[in-house]
Image (cartoon, rainbow, N blue to C red):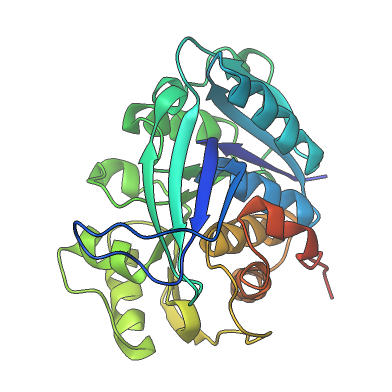
Length: 301
């Protein structure tokens, strides 16, 4: 069975809910405070597992109690955590504010994620050509470069979620199989304003495709996603399943389900639609990975 192998970040999410975001210098009272599993890598791994793919995670936690708890939390989502290392220092932490509208702001301290590496996992972990290796930009860029070469040496496909946006080696970009960005990240990557409409996003996806990736997805929140694959482009409408409760982790749910669908052999455009449905499902419940239990299992027709 094809697998999803995620190399990336794992964080302690500390989330406070408020009626609205504070203005600069303003203090507000929150209505609740929660601690939970987070980090783009861990979220995407949890989403891939809930979507039905065999999923492994390669990452790092600190020597604090948060690290021990998060490792167990990720395993409870059905993810193989054999390759999660413990390193000196603190576990990554994300400070999240969620407004009544469901929108959020996030500040991240990378902590142990700065030490994420393929060592010693690559001594015993060997991707298959049918596997999807998933990367994000919350770990060192040199680690992603190393993973890219490692994955391709086994013939595996690599999905890069370039989040947060950062400069990427053009040579590395040309070896990415699937690039996923949101509208803001797409604009920053190209040095252009973020696309505001599906039509604009299709043009942006085509431009990103010209940088080398075989397939590109530009997510647009409530407007769905634009995609480019080879010489073809298109738009996948959003799925409206109900009112948003918390958008935290919706993009990660989309990436995880997309990776799972590709690993399970679905065509690219169908996999994008699976990602859209997962993201739409995740916003119906509070939290990131804690909302993924309701994600639909990816199936082949």
